Length: 168
Image (cartoon, rainbow, N blue to C red):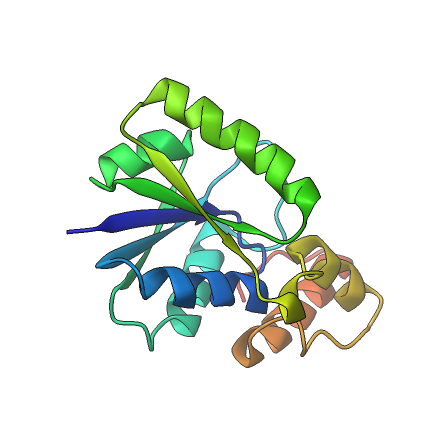
């Protein structure tokens, strides 16, 4: 069985992320989307919210599983009994960082490879950071995130602005 892990923060999940998930799931038997719980960052959405959003937008893909994890991606790959990591590339600047990470992961575990997929051109400029910034200033993010995510982003930003932290 070919099993891969696509790790990331997905804060929030974008159409670019979904593009990579759909394409990667077509070349493996099982794709595990790993939602990173990074204590050093202050995400807009909690880990549980991000997992739920990803489950909602991947419900149409039967061989995709969504889980949260902490720590090194390469360790999560081993825990999942997967063979490789999937990483999306938007631009050459992504490649430099991702190559360094792939080489580091390979030095930690020689059995874990990284598969790079380039994001579709229509999503190449989208990042979670850009989505949050545009939404914060009231811009239209409907072209950047799946339809079911739009109101969640605006709602969460509104809550944060009011000092509330309830789940979306």
